[in-house]
Length: 305
Image (cartoon, rainbow, N blue to C red; front, side, top):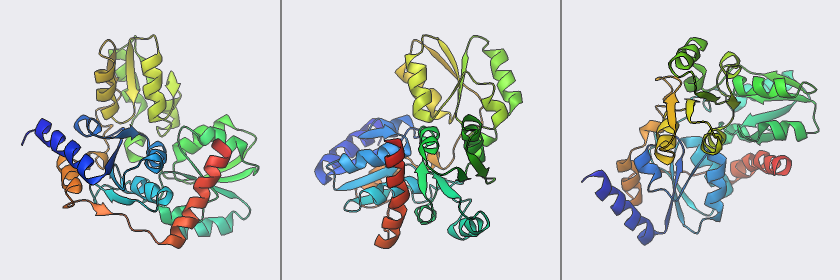
């Protein structure tokens, strides 16, 4: 069976079995092409709520499937590849942050959405890379403990100096490994290109960017910009997506190492098996934990819209 045949079979199974397929923007092109919705983790979770599909298949990583289940408890949620985790989400657990809350008494805990559902149960508000600045600015609390991404936290802290933001050393290993040396090399190779980077990159790299934003922000900026060349400082699948979407422009990876192996774990075969009911993993969540985790997401909506 070739890719086209497999895609057609998946599309037919979606219709027959009332399935909605969600694909994060970092997924392979052959997967995003058969998805009902493509975007970042929170956008996908919101779209799942609106979807009429009784079953939702998440082509992404575990915390994303958990977020869908938190917001859509009546739907059957399947993680297409059970091994697809997020190293950042797994860096901190509930016990550690409970200890830090005791040490930082009175601090509001702001959790990046790249955290487990269990950890979200003790956090005050959740944020995404695109909404973090707006939400932290809108929070009434001045003292804030930002977890887990120290690079995104540093970016937010620099933008809101009137807030007392404390950071914990954690983050995305894929974005954090990019170096200033690689930026200089990319700029020398493509002197006319704009540099667009994700705030999960280290501050020294972010400081060299023409634009800093979320994955969706980077894609929107590149599509709307009158510039013709771009160096993309986020997962390299975005380079491919943008080049296919905007063939008249040129896109270059900031680093050949900007690859999330967990995102790449999901294959088209995984999606097909999930549609057939022979693969994937159903996300089962205790109702008490779901409701507790939902509180910080509700606060995100309250502060961020």
